[in-house]
Length: 50
Length: 142
Image (cartoon, rainbow over all chains, first blue to last red; front, top):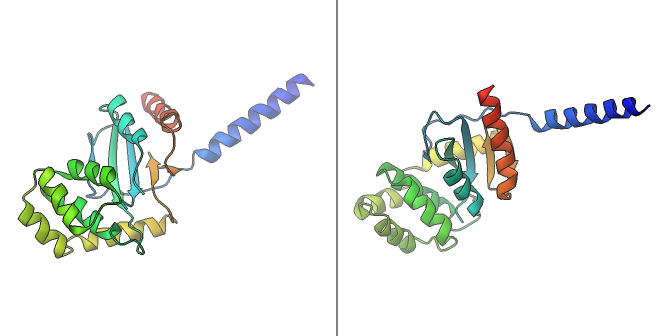
């Protein structure tokens, strides 16, 4: 029984992380920025200065 | 609405690991949103995007034309060239392109971040970004 609950919890946890994992295709284009183009993490930010 | 100090700290702590790319999504009913976006892109033309970007975030909402020209001086820009670009709305097409991209992504607020394509809405705490970035760096190494 205990094993069963552990499995359920693991399943829920993994499905939650999949939900967060949706990845959008956002073109970088010629937009300005900071940092090296070959950095492992690209953070694209949509802003309004005001 | 500008971007909190979390992003600044991330760029410092993850030097060389993060590239930040800025897209303009000025809200049409705010007085200076568009002009400020023009100012950032005009500074970018002179290789000073980052200096202007930081100033705009720091000084917001004081973003009227005279203030922007003052910030251009402070950033060491060619002020004449900057002002001409600002007044001619030289980057209107780029700003419109970014706005259309935002609409296609169904973004109706700012700021919104995409961290290797993973969407984060709003100014989150440093730790919130850190968790995602650490996961991405770990995935990269795999």
